[in-house]
Amino acid sequence: MTPKRKQKLFVILGLVSLTAIAVGLTLYALRSNINLFFSPVQIAQGDAPMERQIRAGGMVKEGSVSRDPESLDVEFTVTDYVDDLQVYYSGILPDLFREGQGVVVVGELQRDGRLYADKVLARHDENYMPPEVAQALEEAGYSPADFQAKAAEVGKRLEAEGVPQASEY
Image (cartoon, rainbow, N blue to C red; front, side, top):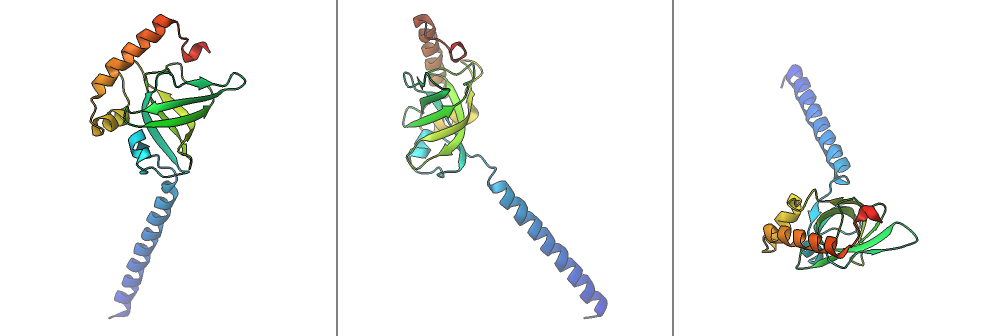
């Protein structure tokens, strides 16, 4: 091998090595920023990682919202009508948040099986369901259309009963 070919080979090997290192560092940095979506069924089966930020979604279980009158702490249950997930959140809930409606929560799943949420994202209207929630319901053998109709029914019943919305607290 001539000295010129040897030099080109070392340059090419150096560039490939630097590229591999750059890709590896990028993937390592992105690893902690990925929020994977899990349904309550998947969380109950142990598919979700503990103490890492995840997204979980489903419907807010009717009668499960509990507020602390002294603070902004809220506890509620997210369900896919197969399994339930306890969620704790401290902060102001979205105006569209209410029982029987679809939500996606972002937070950390703790060893006790509860999710401590950093964010709560509520649906847009009674016809909207987050795509992840719809897919999780379909995988569990349920039709998202059934739950949208049920959510609309629950919303109308709660309004008729005079139950205040989240924005009225």
